[in-house]
Image 1 (cartoon, helix red, strand yellow):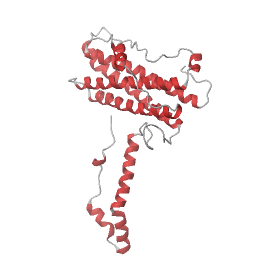
Image 2: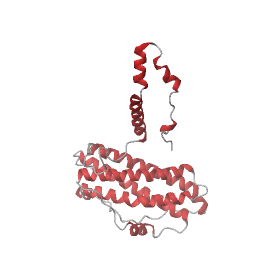
Image 3: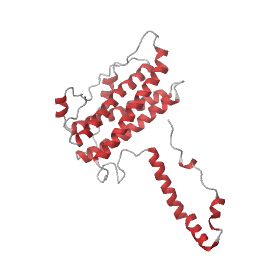
Length: 264
């Protein structure tokens, strides 16, 4: 996945070009000193840094003071838009990573005539409403807490998946970059959800307890082979990433006073 050019790799004008700033007259010399002075250079470097940060994409957290959201000046609507953008990208990349893994490794461990559907992902972390009436009855607090539970749960399994893939002899570099990207963006999404909770519910961090037992519950029936286990992680994460995206979109819909907000 292409990344913005590092700041130290960007071309810098040669000293000769800077020296040419003041060759014609006192006025131009004065202007050259101003243009070429250290203060102005610092200003230009600051502008350049801001441009690079823009290319990298704004982080989910507010930058006014800290991640508590106490002094966050960004509106709830904009925060939700950012969170949804993160969730949409995470889901899309998870689908691409799962497909790439399946095409690369599953044929090596499964006979050609046999298909593997992966684990059934029997996690009961979050109950999914099944009717329009039930959707209308759930609260914004329930939605935010459910999203945070899903996000926090998957941070460690994705890190373990990355460690596992790093030990593969022939893992495609694109697969490694996709899984690494998902781990980073998931942490960003967690910070964003915490800020949303602070602004919408006046709550701070809600750390999930007993995460190890939940992980055991989800993957207790995964097959012993490493390849199939990693495939199961990708399959189940993709499903939960879709839940995160869906819950966030429902939450944003409710901010518009839309009475027909629904999953369906």
